[in-house]
Image 1: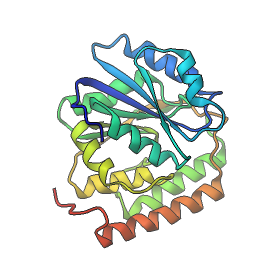
Image 2: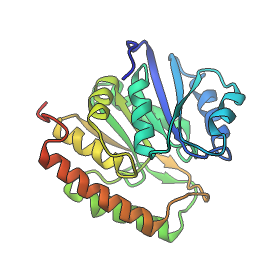
Image 3: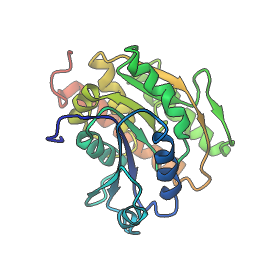
Length: 249
């Protein structure tokens, strides 16, 4: 966890693994949007053991307010997000995918839920009221997403329609509490964080957002589904076995 007390309004954490082909437009759009907002901010790119020079590529871009954390070796998206969240200095901390599938202009929808005190966590949703797809997903991606969100998460986070959207905002207190407890390094880290949030009695708001499907997605329906199922079983075991410590808030 960062030893610096939060002194920024907003931190945006971008996990990245071999993202030289996609990350520059994402960071440029984030910076351009955040410059129009009345807030002190930082963008944290967590390079998760990339082999394509992602960290060096981001540093060469020299975008203001962007800093890079090098995490070695490659451990997974969950580990990268956890590293960034615990190193962040913002009073609000947002996770955002490197592919830019969620436009930065959608961020105020999430932040509004936190700033008015309605929620401790706001998650972008592709299925909640107000959601809109700018491009259609392939059928296999839609089926994979629905399976993850309607079957696997049912026993862990009932009532949440979209657990896997890579656009989530946390208060600093919620982020530090939840990510300091988290253990899952891979795809199912979203499920773990939301399951912990439910059990710690944090208020979670699900917000419909506009999004764009990236045709270069690396999702492998069978391989990644097996990983999520395995990690979901691990989360259930951890919850029952007291791995996360005392969960009563």
